[in-house]
Length: 237
Image 1 (cartoon, rainbow, N blue to C red):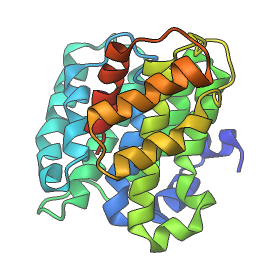
Image 2: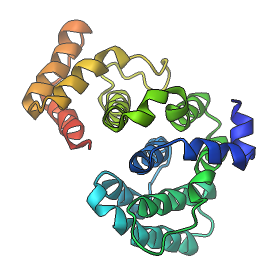
Image 3: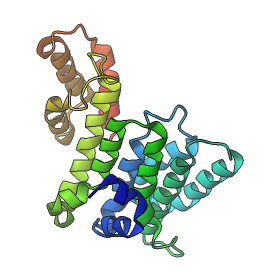
Image 4: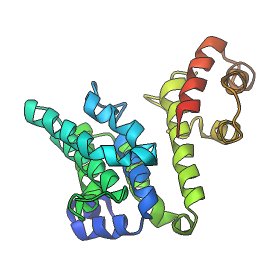
């Protein structure tokens, strides 16, 4: 499935969206939206406030008001670029509310446009690595058919991806995330994910990160910074 086809053919967007279980749709959409967090200079607060809603199913109904906040931001900032990013965030808020099962849902085709808008937003940045990340996130459930029948595994995979992001963008002990291949730290993700899954404390996670830095990589890391990163990992839902 070519990137161009996903960007231009809404029927493909429908096929992708319809293949995702309802309870996973907000997490999937939020994962796609979050791909841009480290590329947007100042992510609007209205969008940042959407993520905690996505992460808590009991709060999904709040996404209706959050959509209004995002729409209001767009109306008050007509020159915001890329505008497709705001449109994408609106669609993510819409499908999150719809997944709540509350009355007066948004248009049922809202989710069909998420793949297209995400890939159109990529064009603004002209970054091949970002495009690969976006396409990979869009097609998670098309490439992993078992997730459709195993919601627990699907949710864990989204958590896994978020931890991978934290290690790449926030931890980055070598300082290479603007030049090296995206998989540089991916061999460390399973250990950190398993610690997170087992309910490990911030100290336990930080010590493992510190071990990776100072022993495995031979770098001169600090435990204090690792504790900060551990807090981010623990906060992942």
